[in-house]
Length: 292
Image (tube, rainbow, N blue to C red; front, side):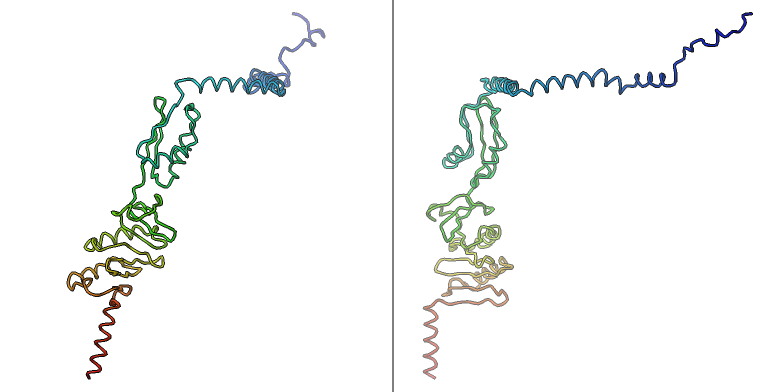
């Protein structure tokens, strides 16, 4: 047997120390490996790029290069828009559309902001809706034009309104649109729905109806020929008008010498006679009193 001696007591232990073991384990963690293989090279690359573009001349060169590439793409013939074709608009509206659209042809399709152009079009009073599409080098603009439904007489002139009361355009003469019903008075445009209902109910008087007058921004009057007027209440105007129509059918009310049928108090209608008829009645009363 080999005797135990002191020379065997100082043999180096191959097992790592606890600190070395933990350091080796730490070097094998995924986070550190990513940092070594990706983080440090990325940092060095970013630093190099930052130092390069810290020079103003280098930045200008890059911008010029990017502009050249962008221009070479958008100016290709297949992306060029040479004209605009407008459908659904009258001559006047078409001219207005061409004036307001901020487009100078020819232009690249990449330079056309279709959404912004549509927003500009629908802000035009005569335009109800619009759609835009680029196809085969042409900008197609399809417009839905508001249809005039009423002539609105204001203090400062005449305007056309559509069936919702939206302004369409101004006109100079009522007889330019003789087939459209006439409304008058401040605030009439905001109550066109009620005016449409009254017009539908007043169809038996259509040949005598001259227009609707919005009074005090709260109620309607019907203006008839022979200077007759039907004054309607602010509430239940249609029901009050139907009562007048029934009286006219049964007693020929509006064929008499009456200037105003006041229905503002529908439970107590009031009739106003013509001035001449009032004078005749007054003389008859006075003469009858003298005879007595």
